[in-house]
Image (cartoon, rainbow, N blue to C red; front, side, top):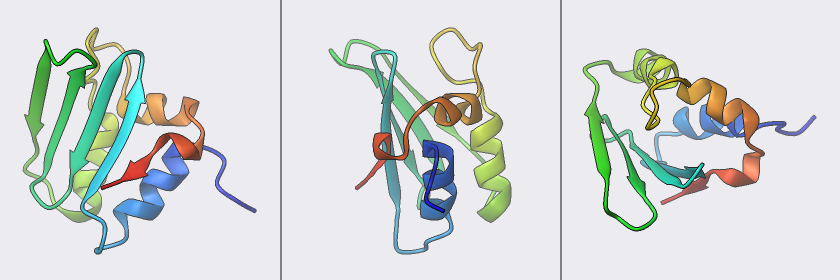
Length: 94
């Protein structure tokens, strides 16, 4: 059975110590998680608006903190909800 959502791929990538950065786009925003720095950022396509969030957690706790964060522009959806809507191809690695 393959991956069904981008959330599945998030977990696969997050558990891999050789992968530092995950990227995805959603509703006009580009998101980046840098696990090496524990920073999550998003920016608009035109670069006019950008937000950066830091997390104190590490390992599995970091993954859960990121997934539970409501960091989209309207603060109404968790990253978990967003990734659950997207196909696995929506995440790419950097």
